[in-house]
Length: 113
Length: 110
Image (tube, rainbow over all chains, first blue to last red; front, top):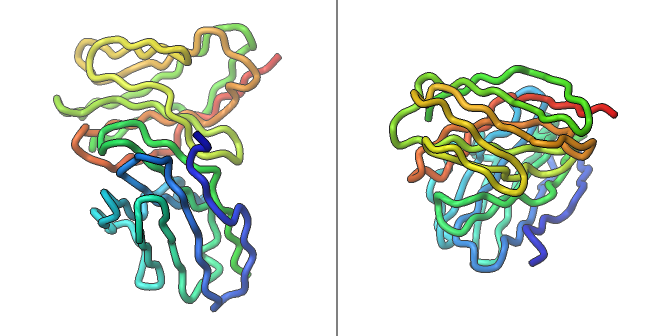
């Protein structure tokens, strides 16, 4: 299996632009998680889905952030408009079942200028 | 979920065992202890988890004290590739969330 796939791996954009991060979970996994990692706050869970339905989005920082999962093999995290404080590494993870091991992707490094 | 306390850093000599402590004095009966690690610039990687019995897999061993208030992750023969941040996380199994703390930066030296 290819593991969790994220794209792009690196993104540099200017403040105010829309940013879309993409994730393909491991085939057959029914849970998908979005995390953000910064030096100041460490690794934080933003939102997670079960069978394409958002279960807990309490970690989403504000309305500028939105996440969707249109099907079992694809999810997006969108930031509109982006701000410099959104600069971080964004990780996607998936698991087979809520209680099982989460497998993380390589992350997307976002820099907002 | 219960909070965990880990030392911020530790060094280990290559080929020696690395013993990583974690305190979780407020752990509840239904909460498991999970260990993940993050090698620089990579996503976190699952290592092992346990409830109250000691556990071992191909990567490491997990020793949980009888009162479950602390645990130790043991890397039996540390290699340079084990240099990473190690996270101890306590989580109830019915919860999807993993709450990562600051972890322990482990540096394995030749």
